[in-house]
Length: 93
Image (cartoon, rainbow, N blue to C red; front, side, top):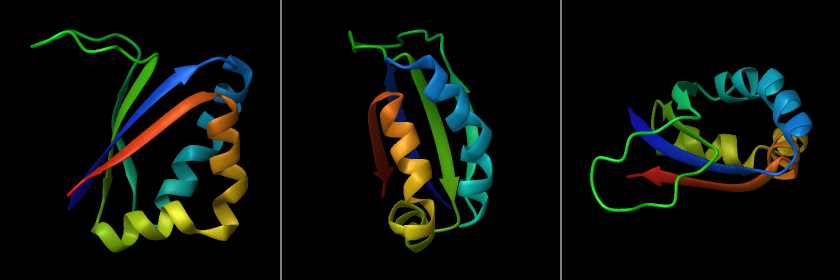
């Protein structure tokens, strides 16, 4: 199992709502799953810039995560996420 951290700064809530409808099936296509997502945070250490939305995503392995990120059939899903605002996704491993 490998995890990714997604951080979104939302400037288009309507696009984010549409993305939420398609994100789960897009992740599932490659064995991925949103383990947790939140819009409220508690800082445990330091003073990070809190995003509007943060999510922890799991994949079976790095190859599955890369396949999700590079799947041409999911390009519209990724474009929709990006149209919601700033989007940073870090693979942890």
